[in-house]
Structure formats: C-alpha cells, structure tokens
Image 1 (cartoon, rainbow, N blue to C red):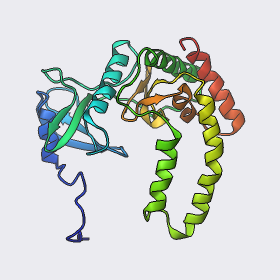
Image 2: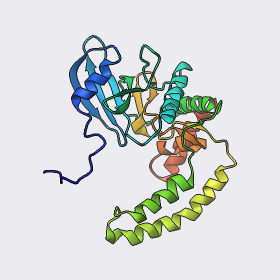
Image 3: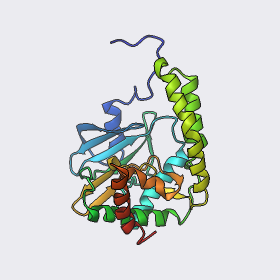
Length: 264
C-alpha cells in the first residue's frame, strides 16, 4: 500500500530503530540492537537490550500531547513514590540528573526493565496487598498538589470528547444517532456524580490504574506507566481493578479496601 502524496506525516514516521538506539545510548550504555515494541496506546515504548547490563525501556512521548512541565511532574511523582518504597517504576536519570531527554525531534525517557506477569487478583490476600500499596500511594499523593497535570473533569474528559466526535467523521453514520443518544442520556447522572465527588479529597493519582499497568512478581505488585497521572478522587484508581457481577465487584472492593484503609 502506498501513501497518498498529500497525506499528513505521522508523528512517529521519523522514529527509526537508529534513532531509538542512539537515544538510549545517551544514557551511557551500549545497545545490542535488540528491540521489542511494547503495548502503548498514546506513546511508543520499546524494550532495548544492552551489552553489559539488563535491558531498558525507552518511552517516546507522542508529540503535542503533554508539555514539558507536565512530563517532568509525572517523573517527579514516580520518583517520589519509589523513594518511599512504594513499588512504582520511575525513570532513570542521566549523569546531569535529567530524566527527560531529547533526540531526533522526540522527547523520551528511559526506565529500568521490570519483569513481572499480569496480575490475576484471584485471592483476598493479593487484593488486600494491592490495596495497601494504593493506600500508601494516595497518602503520599495527598501530601502536595500537582501544578501541571490534568484534573479529572466532566468538561475535559466528557463534553469536549463528544463535541470532537460530533464535529469529525469518526463515528460511523449508522451508529451516530444511537451513540450520541447514549451520551446525552449518560451526562446528567455523570454530572451528578462529579458534583458529589467535589465533597471528597482530590489528590494526586496514578490515573490509569488498570491491571495492564500492574506487574506482579514474587514480592507483589509493581506500578508502571504514570503517563495519565492526574488530580482526582481516590476511586479513580480503584474502580478499574474490579470485574464481574455487582456482587463480585463489591466483594473485590471490600478486599482492596481492607488493605487500603490501613494507610488512607
């Protein structure tokens, strides 16, 4: 398939293997050339093998999504968590102390490789253990505010998204009427929920705490990918852990909270 001459260039068209390897070697390592693309919706993330040490993970931020101050605040939050022995995978610093680097027109960071498996959370003990770490994360998250990260809100994450979909040819024609009817039906109760949440504490959160962003090892969970960290109510980091029927989710949440409330 060929690209039409007037088609806009994709932001990642220039991200070649050579650029990726050169970027990682700015951290004082020599790469073997081994690259493995990892799952990431917004960014481009690669496992990069090195000659004399463990592999690293290079994360290339999608151009135009976050400004530099917001990315640095993400890094600082992850580092703060790691310093308090909360198992968050934080970016590595270069010799000058910088965690955010630039190469080939991209902003990127390098993280240590964290082995682990997808969590199953089948036992009450595992759910309580994860709850304890999230309670500690939120305790630290409440200690100071974000200044550059987003705030969870109905306008930015709800109305603005629906307006974009209305104005652009994204939703198939045969689905437009039922899709937008559902959004209009859902907005009033969602707005009611947000008004109620204003009475709760709004703190620094992971923001995208689903099971795909948790790696489980013999010592328990490790939290990765703070790309969507933001300010919001604590439940934003809890609801994505739950699945199944309402009764099953209530039991799961009770187990998570049994650990969570030891700290928060």
